[in-house]
Image 1 (cartoon, helix red, strand yellow):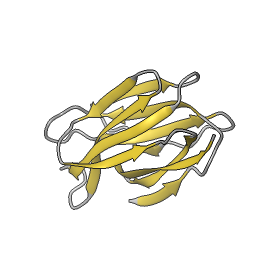
Image 2: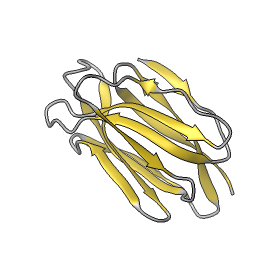
Image 3: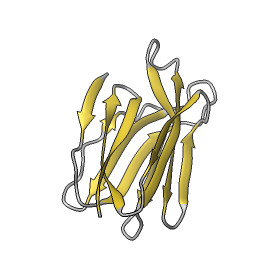
Length: 136
């Protein structure tokens, strides 16, 4: 697994996620953020049997990112992101994956701030995710 960091941007306009809801090995396999000024790279892979979803955020702002981490037989010995949910000022997207393990991902964007980028660790699957918060 290797660390990655998209850095800080003005705005997240779209998120692409590949995930599985299989109870045994369900997890988030990859994430890609499309920013207003650049398309971030895809972090992770899309294994067979995983589905991909596009979250359009052109007129929305992410207020909370939450999720679960745990073990997956697809990545023995590693903690992986099993589930992710994104709450915006208008609606909730997800949860994607399976809500099994530890509810250890919890980032809230306070009023007057905004989510401006993602960082994390990935291999075949997404192992960890964190966020960059910027001023309004």
